[in-house]
Image 1 (cartoon, rainbow, N blue to C red):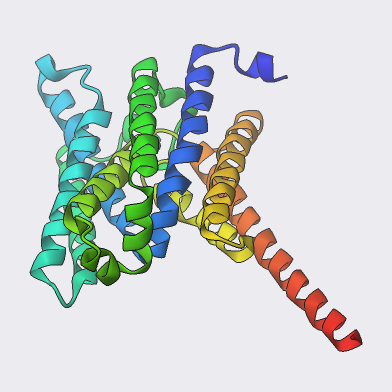
Image 2 (image 1 turned 60 degrees about the horizontal axis):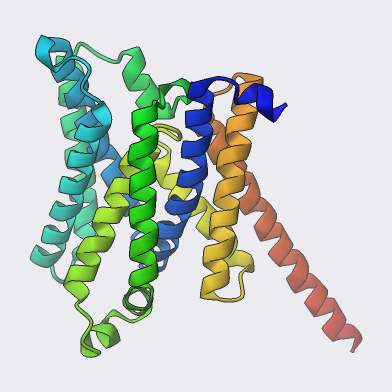
Length: 286
């Protein structure tokens, strides 16, 4: 069944891309959630949408730019948005959370302007909004592969520093860790992963893949490393299960992936409650 499903090149591209995104999105998502920056994924996804819309607008109006991969413009906007968030966090030192809604609003505003200039939505834009199995090309696959290697290497090399910054930023700074530089690297990685993930999950749903598997793993994990492992496991189940289900039932892949992630979250919550109730009853009997 799997061999028949992966007979076509575009399906191979989608599943290989999904396999990588299922690892790197929850992997970074653990640090994003622990640092209480969950909304940053939403902000950067809307900025990415502005880049995609601008790219499609340019392609439509400038013949020599035809064939330009919107993924690249989306990445430029996403990384730019992440840098602006960092800048604004410095400007609003005591109200750092303001940086995220400012960038999110800017991304939505630019997206609406570019989409209106392009005379509304088209098929390509809908694919980016909600994900599309057929949209992933071989070039996209290689770009996402490079980003995946980069993210994994950064997490391995900077694991200790990211761990300390996530749980106790003041102590980390006092220990001599270059907090600004590491946070800069981290947020650029988040921006690249968000831009890369939009092909499969869609811009409007990509933040779910960074937070839902983490939310599920936090309920049942017994330590930080176990949280990372379970987040990646749940992410892979969501992405691959969603792609298989979407293919055979002819559903939107992004929505299917997210709903499987929601189902895993609900099951983890009930599992945790079951463990607690068992513990209470065993305590009463003793």
